[in-house]
Image (cartoon, rainbow, N blue to C red; front, side):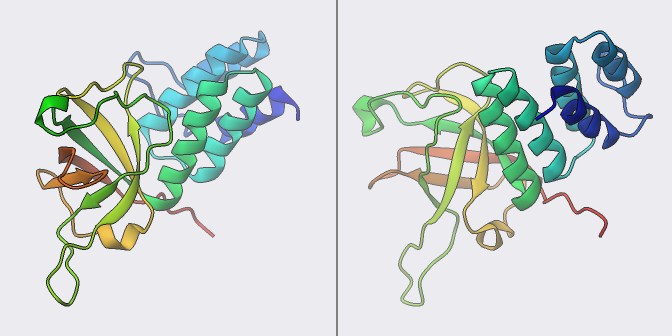
Length: 196
């Protein structure tokens, strides 16, 4: 795979009018690309992808480029973002119970494949709790320790079960009984729909 062509194809998804918080645009990314500043291009395109929702193909191209550059953490992150674009994602503030209060004994590491169950208000016909599964990504690079809170991203395994949730709703994380934490929904982002 040609690194330049993957980054160039990803840049073509970005509108020339989109700007990062620092004021950079796709023209800046293309200039860095001309000078072989691939990692700079990758990070700038990620920022531009955050400025306006991008389709799964965009994030797949960034994952391919990161793979060629041996940036494994970024490969995992961009593959995650590809799933977000395909299925939608919820951002939340997750607070873990302290270990002495029945919570988990080890931290949740950023970028690791945790797949807990969640009480999102669903019940069986008999009125029993019916949990749903969502992959969990701790934002940033700092582990989420027991008893602490941090922003997280939730990627539902069955997105249609989660569509009723809205910002400020509180859901419970289950790794076993009782719950090991609670999360307050901050943002609900739908899948990115691309033109046929």
